[in-house]
Amino acid sequence: MARGGRKDQPIDRSQGPTAEFVDDLRRLRGGISLQEIGRRMGYHSSTVSRRLNPTELPAWQFVESYVKACGAESGPWEERWRVLSRPDPEDQKRPAGEAAGSRRPGWRLVLAAGAGGVLVAGLGVVLLQAPGEQEAVAMDTPPPAPDPRYGFATRIDSMAFRVLSREWTQTSAGDVELWWNNSCPDGTTTYWVALRPAGATARFSCDSWQYYKWASVPAGTHHLEFWKDHDGRSIHGSGVVRAGMPVVIHPKPAPTQSPTAK
Image (cartoon, rainbow, N blue to C red; front, side, top):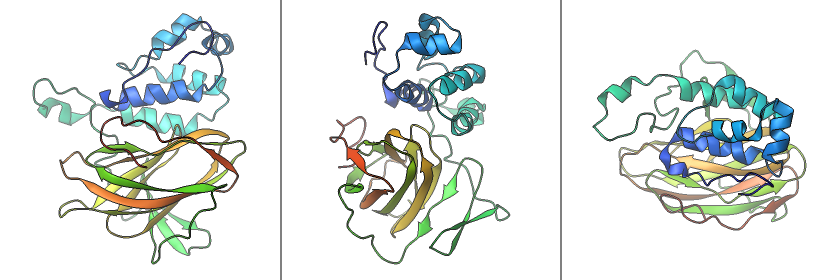
């Protein structure tokens, strides 16, 4: 997308987590030009563009400087960067031609019994946490219909691996809540949802209503990313996204990999 002067080349997010991470960094810039970001960072704009390469994870020092130049907090980005920067022992077992680092970060994270608990206000439920991943809360009933000024209902017709929700823009900071119920085939019990471009990843369980809240989400344009283990099985479901402030809902995105949330 063009932002004045130098232009970004589109990134194919299906290349893997590093490509997604770099694309999210680009999106974080919003309407700020590369020239302005470079000025704030002390880099030439061509250097910034070159380091936002979807095939190579940029150094943390660069990412931290870039995120701060965009006016965002670096903490959530550091969490994602550290997951991506870890060497993957599974790479040694990959068939020839399969790209290293193509796994979804967090697939093999397990919630430890001794993890710290966090109380969800008003729900009376304690969430067990593990680094980089949190747990959604099981709900007994479906959510109420959303006020269109503050959210939207959506569904997934078929997800074999990954889908994106539609985007929304909020002009102020506030909480974002998700209620979701996915039906899964035998052998599939879990899927994940993350707030993009910068937000915690929550682990959801199949075949029941689940709830998660992202607190104090900054102003800007956001979307949700859903994914599951790439096992060839398809899941489907529906839910509600609700924000604590008025939002502008964007049109549905074009399909990227598997059918998208509608």
